[in-house]
Amino acid sequence: MQHTDRRDFLKLAGMAGVAFTAGLFPRRQAAAQGSDFHFIQFSDTHWGYKGPANPDAEHTLEKAVVTVNGLPAKPDFIVFTGDLTHTTEDGKERRARMQRFKEIVSALAVKDVRFMPGEHDASLDKGEAFKEFFGATHFTFDHKGVHFIALDNVSDPAARLGDEQLAWLAADLKQRKMDDRIVVLTHRPLFDLVPNWDWTTADGAKAIELLMPYQNVVVFYGHIHQEHHHMTGHIAHHAARSLIFPQAAPGTAPRRPPPPPFDASLAPLGTRDIAMGATVTMTELPVTKG
Amino acid sequence: MKRRLFAALLIGSAAGGVVRLAAQPSNEVSVAASKFEFTPETVKGKVGQPLTFVLTSFDRIHGFKMPEFGVRADIVPDQETRVTITPTQAGSFVFFCDIFCGDGHEEMSGTLVVEA
Image (cartoon, rainbow over all chains, first blue to last red; front, side, top):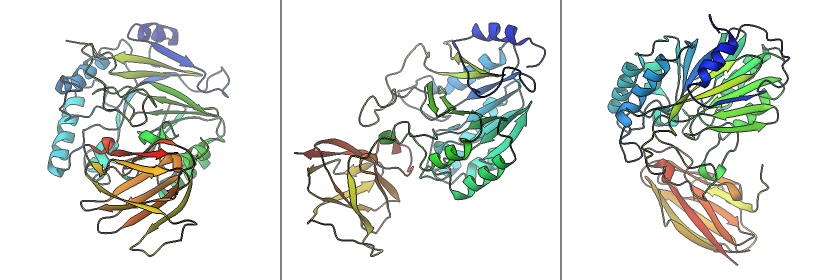
């Protein structure tokens, strides 16, 4: 974290929403290597959606940008974990939505922003338009001692990472030490959250198998439009809220129901502030009315 | 992972000639996939009776997945895709498209009702 004591940051961040702290790097000793910092996760903004699930859809993203810009502690960077735009079969309209999305998020005060695709952005054209606007669909970067791996489980419309990307992941992991702090970013859950709702990644188990030997791994994803926390062994998986509409709670019906009625409070929508240290603290930043 | 309740006997593409005979005669039901629905949406079967889904699509590739049976298949336009299962217990079971096909894909699902 820059220019801010960690304790002060948590105090300030806690004012913005509910904080969730867990020993998310369970095999890591308290003596942190590298500096603490925090970043923001946006997910499932679905720019271009029009429908009853969010009559305020044209303004929700802008409100979230204002909220993040107003944080007392400036984040080091921002990640968008997919479904930046709502799907359309018209390639010209898809690009128009991506262009408008970029214009809106250009108002973010933090300029280090990483974009990942969701199936709404990339599944109909295998990521072609996304790459034109945002670059690679899977990538890595390092920040203050933490290794970030962004995986693409959406450009294949069958929700597969694919053998090529899995080989790329394996090669990247071979360069890591077993106790390195590793953050994996995906759109869809890597594990079988609700197979009957297709809330899974077809070959996600192979990625988890590759990650399992590493002692300090945490996964942040989107897709399900709500907070959710799950462990596969020692690996924690945390789903983020959407900025367009919430989805039903996992597994609450045999077939996935449509989004619940619009909540005028906008409370189920929001972004997430993630503070990285020996542990990880997530603070939800709800969208507010007005 | 949950234990699978059912065993798939056959998954094959008639166009590709990949067909194995099931142990018993199989009831067949034709199911058409199109954006964004299966027709019929509800299919009936009986416990212990093999059931073959004869799947077709005329608009684009769709998927057919039944996690509780451990089966999935691509439904390729102008081909007939056959998926055979044998239910071992009564109940309602979901099948759905698992290849993203557009705005409405998330609602593209159906139900197999298995009677005793």
